[in-house]
Amino acid sequence: MALRRLEIDEGRDIARYGKQLEELGDQPSVEILHQVIHDEKQHYHELGDLIRNHYPASAVAEMKADPKSVIAELLAKRSDSGKQAAG
Image 1 (cartoon, rainbow, N blue to C red):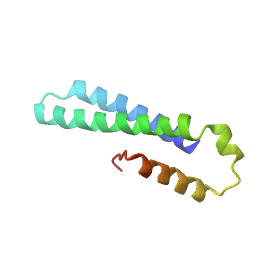
Image 2 (cartoon, rainbow, N blue to C red):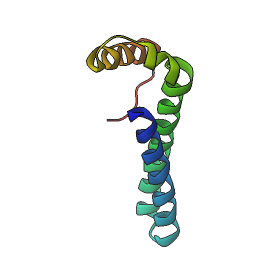
Image 3 (cartoon, one colour):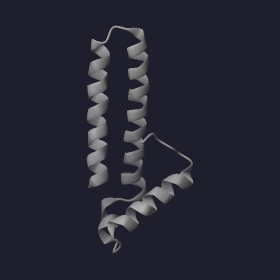
Image 4 (spheres, rainbow, N blue to C red):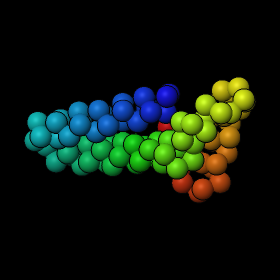
Protein backbone atom coordinates (compact mmCIF):
# COMPACT_ATOMS: atom_id res chain seq x y z
CA MET A 1 0.00 0.00 0.00
CA ALA A 2 2.92 2.35 0.68
CA LEU A 3 4.20 1.91 -2.86
CA ARG A 4 0.72 2.55 -4.25
CA ARG A 5 0.48 5.74 -2.18
CA LEU A 6 3.83 6.91 -3.54
CA GLU A 7 2.65 6.14 -7.07
CA ILE A 8 -0.47 8.27 -6.52
CA ASP A 9 1.66 11.11 -5.15
CA GLU A 10 3.96 10.94 -8.18
CA GLY A 11 0.91 11.19 -10.46
CA ARG A 12 -0.28 14.26 -8.59
CA ASP A 13 3.18 15.82 -8.82
CA ILE A 14 3.22 15.28 -12.60
CA ALA A 15 -0.14 17.06 -12.89
CA ARG A 16 0.98 19.90 -10.61
CA TYR A 17 4.20 20.44 -12.57
CA GLY A 18 2.24 20.32 -15.82
CA LYS A 19 0.04 23.14 -14.55
CA GLN A 20 3.11 25.14 -13.54
CA LEU A 21 4.51 24.59 -17.02
CA GLU A 22 1.48 26.38 -18.47
CA GLU A 23 2.03 29.33 -16.11
CA LEU A 24 5.74 29.85 -16.74
CA GLY A 25 6.97 32.08 -19.51
CA ASP A 26 10.76 32.02 -19.35
CA GLN A 27 12.63 29.36 -21.31
CA PRO A 28 15.18 28.33 -18.61
CA SER A 29 12.38 27.57 -16.14
CA VAL A 30 10.40 25.67 -18.78
CA GLU A 31 13.44 23.52 -19.62
CA ILE A 32 14.04 22.69 -15.96
CA LEU A 33 10.39 21.85 -15.44
CA HIS A 34 10.39 19.55 -18.47
CA GLN A 35 13.29 17.61 -16.88
CA VAL A 36 11.49 17.49 -13.53
CA ILE A 37 8.35 16.14 -15.22
CA HIS A 38 10.44 13.54 -17.05
CA ASP A 39 12.00 12.44 -13.75
CA GLU A 40 8.61 12.26 -12.03
CA LYS A 41 7.23 10.11 -14.86
CA GLN A 42 10.17 7.74 -14.45
CA HIS A 43 9.43 7.49 -10.72
CA TYR A 44 5.75 6.86 -11.46
CA HIS A 45 6.53 4.08 -13.94
CA GLU A 46 9.16 2.52 -11.66
CA LEU A 47 6.70 2.38 -8.77
CA GLY A 48 4.00 0.97 -11.04
CA ASP A 49 6.42 -1.68 -12.24
CA LEU A 50 7.29 -2.66 -8.68
CA ILE A 51 3.64 -2.83 -7.69
CA ARG A 52 2.22 -4.67 -10.67
CA ASN A 53 5.06 -6.84 -11.95
CA HIS A 54 7.26 -7.73 -9.01
CA TYR A 55 5.10 -7.72 -5.93
CA PRO A 56 1.34 -7.90 -6.47
CA ALA A 57 -0.68 -7.13 -3.35
CA SER A 58 -1.59 -10.79 -2.85
CA ALA A 59 2.08 -11.83 -2.83
CA VAL A 60 3.01 -9.17 -0.29
CA ALA A 61 0.11 -10.20 1.95
CA GLU A 62 1.33 -13.79 1.89
CA MET A 63 4.90 -12.87 2.87
CA LYS A 64 5.78 -13.69 6.44
CA ALA A 65 8.86 -11.41 6.39
CA ASP A 66 9.04 -8.14 8.24
CA PRO A 67 8.73 -4.87 6.26
CA LYS A 68 12.49 -4.20 6.37
CA SER A 69 13.16 -7.52 4.64
CA VAL A 70 10.58 -6.78 1.95
CA ILE A 71 12.10 -3.34 1.29
CA ALA A 72 15.61 -4.79 1.19
CA GLU A 73 14.48 -7.35 -1.37
CA LEU A 74 12.76 -4.69 -3.49
CA LEU A 75 15.89 -2.55 -3.47
CA ALA A 76 18.07 -5.53 -4.36
CA LYS A 77 15.83 -6.38 -7.34
CA ARG A 78 15.92 -2.74 -8.42
CA SER A 79 19.70 -2.51 -8.30
CA ASP A 80 19.99 -5.79 -10.23
CA SER A 81 17.83 -4.36 -13.04
CA GLY A 82 20.34 -1.63 -13.87
CA LYS A 83 17.64 1.06 -13.71
CA GLN A 84 18.40 3.98 -11.46
CA ALA A 85 16.03 6.80 -10.61
CA ALA A 86 16.64 10.00 -8.71
CA GLY A 87 16.07 9.97 -4.96
